[in-house]
Length: 155
Image (tube, rainbow, N blue to C red; front, side, top):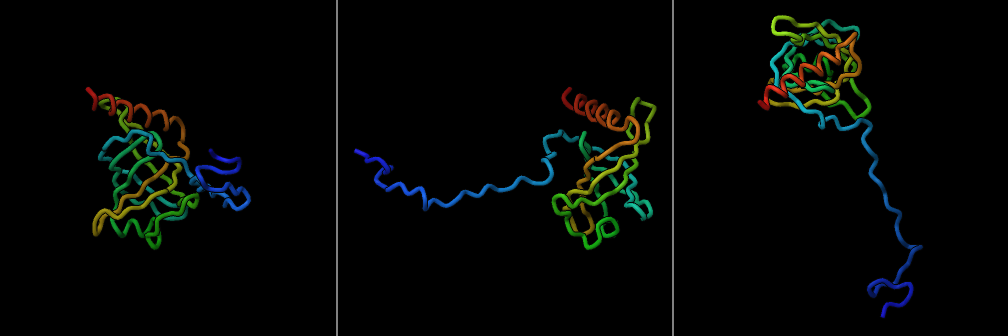
C-alpha cells in the first residue's frame, strides 16, 4: 500500500523539485505552413540606401519567397553572410511581376525582411524573404497567383 506522500516507492519531496524551464517561442511564427510553388521569376531587391540588385525567385508562397543568388550578391545584401538572428531581420525592398491574366502581368512592390540564409553550393545561396507589406493590392495578386499555380498542379 502506498503511504500518503509517496509515489511508487519514492518519497514525494515537493520542496526539492527543480522548477521546469519552458523553452521560449521564437520571435517569429513558423511560416512554413504556407504552401509554396516552384517558380522561375526575376526579382529586384535593394536594401535602403543601396542600389538595386537582380536575383531569381525559386519558390513563392502567400507569406514570402525563396531567392536564389550568388555569393557576391549575398555579400552585398547580407554583409558577412551571417544568417539573421530571430527578430533581427534585414529590411529589403522587392519588385517583381506576377501574371494576372495569360497576357498581362502586374508589377508588385513589397517591403520585406530577409529572415533565412542557406548556402546551397559554392556560389549559390538561398535567402528566405518574408513579405511585410505591399503597395496597393500586391498581396491579393500574389495570393491569386499562388492559388492558381496550386490548383493547376493538382489537376
